[in-house]
Image 1 (cartoon, rainbow, N blue to C red):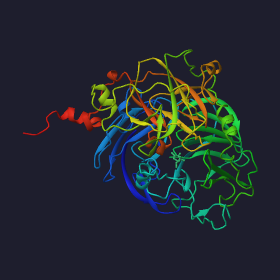
Image 2: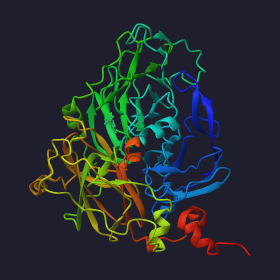
Image 3: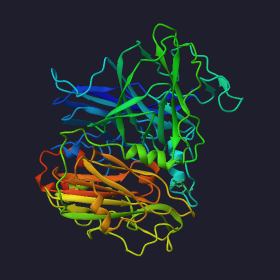
Image 4: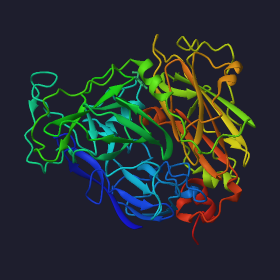
Length: 550
Ligand SMILES: O=C1O[C@H]([C@@H](O)CO)C(O)=C1O
């Protein structure tokens, strides 16, 4: 798959209001990549942004042997400068529902994303049947420019980005009109689509009595979501590119960074259409649900459903979310984790202050991106470019996770957790109270370069005794996992992919405010890094050697 992409800003109307978005080849969202297992994806990415750098991360693709193609600014590569072209070249080795997105500053929020679908090799079959499929990539959208969002996040006092104006499905949503007559407040008018508007919803057109696969992925900057389809149950079959033990749900939670496949049967009255709703979870929703229509083809899609849209669960019904999340198990026959770990990292998630700026910290360190990519600085042993001391592996046992931090002051840092090659690592993500009393938020954590097994979830503070309840039999393999308010999540992975890999909260403003860490492993084994990946910071100095030309 040889692709030539130009990234540029352009005018677009994602929610029927014109704004500036980041597009690829004149499209928003960017083009869908569709490939088979084993294919090489080759993307010549040209930055046409004018005044800022860009990179693209291929979310969920492990980049076995190609860590330089992971597309993370400051970690796997230098930002691609305006006018320059960088070539990403990697193998897609596992079938599944993936996506790609910007991984520099807040470029995901600016609209830099698209779908990446990997099919099983030609002649092979998925472990479930379907007659047709649809692909829905969810995102959230602000009317404030991404530059204002970014400046607000590092201002004192913090100017928080607030809740999104609109939820988008495949880059389409409605802000100043509604698909529903009189939805929400009475001032919202009904949309009149001719069908070719940039914000016109993508209708799912189906035949009766068939089975459809819906690929669902969330690249939201902030919002956690729930999707429900009127009158149709969904059978969950895939999560983050891994098969799961099929189970039926009425509605499904999806956090930023996650993907699922569900199958539905079109066995309802074919003389009706049905609403599909997507609502906000975990934060007080100020954003109306996104809506589209499941259209039984023999009637027009413009015929509004007679049954009102399914109401997604209340934003703070965490029991509902936990019950869904804890129902996910790997499909029988999937790889199982090693029985024990070599090293355990405990990561306390807190909201803090540094000089009065609001940040997020892991074990009291708020991550800042260095100007030299770790892949180069670790490989070449450059000592003066990032903190050389190993960041903290745990936090004081006496820390009270139920209250705002007693001493909210934190430190910035950019140290690296050096992981030994082929060892088994456990990470316990520990949630806590944020700065405001009685507040603890949802954080979806995403690991680059590896999938991990989710061994368990619990309430309150993790204790050694909780290990006894770890699921070592059929834990799901994932690349993104949620921590619930005041709870913990345990995961395990085998560090077998040399590279420099971020592990971070997938809420984009939270990562921007320091909520992440970097792991490095066996970087000496990494071969064939393109020099243009490292032509910035101290690695550029190293390549240039001579400071002045004769
Ligand atoms: O990082 C965040 O900042 C705000 C709030 O805590 C401060 O205004 C919020 O809701 C976040 O998730």
